[in-house]
Amino acid sequence: MFRNVAELVELAESKQKRISTLMIEQEMEVTGKNREEIIRQMGVNLDVMEQAVEKGLQGVRSVSGLTGGDAVLLQNYIKSGNSLSGELLLDAVSKAVATNEVNAAMGTICATPTAGSAGVVPGTLFALQNKLKPTREQKIEFLFTAGAFGFGVANNASISGAAGGCQAEVGSASGMAAAAIVEMAGGTPAQSAEAMAITLKNMLGLVCDPVAGLVEVPCVKRNAMGAANAMVAADMALAGITSRIPCDEVIDAMYKIGQTMPSALRETAQGGLAATPTGRELEAKIFGLPLNKK
Amino acid sequence: MKFRSVFDIIGPVMIGPSSSHTAGAARIGRVARNLFDREPKWAHISFYGSFAKTYKGHGTDVAIVGGLLDFDTFDERIKESLELARKKKMKVTFREEEAVPEHPNTAKVTVGDDDGELELVGISIGGGKIEIVELNGFKLRLSGHNPAILVVHDDRFGAIANVSNILAKHQINIGQMEVSRKEKGKMALMTIEVDHNLEDHVIAEITALPNITQVARIVD
Image (cartoon, rainbow over all chains, first blue to last red; front, side, top):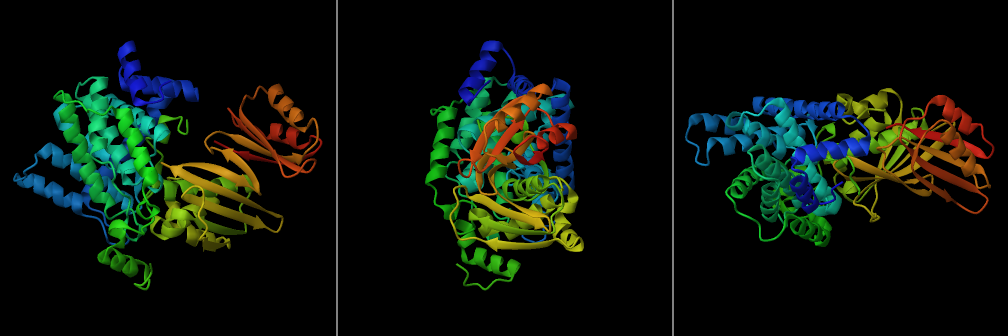
């Protein structure tokens, strides 16, 4: 049983096993379920993710009208052939956006690790389709690897925006995705951990300040950037770049930052973007409240 | 370890937009419904912390009532739960509490009908995972992810041994057990997390024991 990222990497290296394999074995041990049942269950999650991306790419709109349609804009832009950042990166971004637009519209999604951050892992996974040509089994393994790294964060820090700010939600999701991308691209377990550390370092301090308390603004765009962050960090790790601060220490730093964050910046819609004049105006408009609400 | 399963991280499959405010709330409502063991006629729901500040935007109200109607986190009917409750003549009220709770996402649910009522406090700890921290004034810790039984009993010698003997006889393994009482010799509560769901006849056997007042079941 692994309790943190260092133990996970150590276990993978000493046993010469993939992270996904270790996660499946631990799940078997903890739940008493057999391998087939566990893989089948993850397959259901994969299907839900795929359907959410498809739905989002057709164009959805939330009840409040604050979000929707951006995934489609990005796909059209990619097709124009004029994109600057590269097709694969923008494809990941658009698919992350698609998932979160469906989430904001009260559609069916798979929390990864939360609903507010559900776009990053599937966004990057499905963008790798053309480049790495993964089989269904490999896609399922991607989710177990992402889960293994998320497991390390959830048990040693937090994955909840209310407890730890958006760094704990989108930050964790991005770190999980970066680690899983590295494994799928053929990197080592240690490189996965480096990718997660690099990603999470760049999301430290990210506050949770949803406008009108809705999981829409800025959540959808933060998933977009979370996906981009994960792709770039995975490439950096695969290039041989390491994090000077070990992954578990970054996770610990994230936890401590979350604890010292004022509650106005932890999913209460009392501070940050939620408290801007426009944020307040949107809140008043959506809920029909007087503007002087503090 | 707060999170034991990979499906606590990748999952649950749910209706958006928030795993802690929507899926977690639905699960808290559903645990209340399961413990009450029937559809309540009325429900008073108090939201604390982040739940109180943002429940409308997150559909926390809609989700918790969905849970009271026995809907799972991915049940599409969650979206219409307030309307469905109205049609079933379930009276639901919400309160935004000012008190600062220990955990930012806390809800107190009181449900009842002509035959009784039940009050529980649940917290949503992230990613859709919940803990039930209080039941009818008793402090307790219940993950909501393992099958469990709650046994209300009189604080007398042998009461706990009798219950565990019945579980042993049916080869049911106890994962975690907690006993608390309001006052020496008065009402007490056993919280028992088990590895497998208990069948009706086992529950009936426990209920028939001396000094046992009520047995409620939480199915995984």
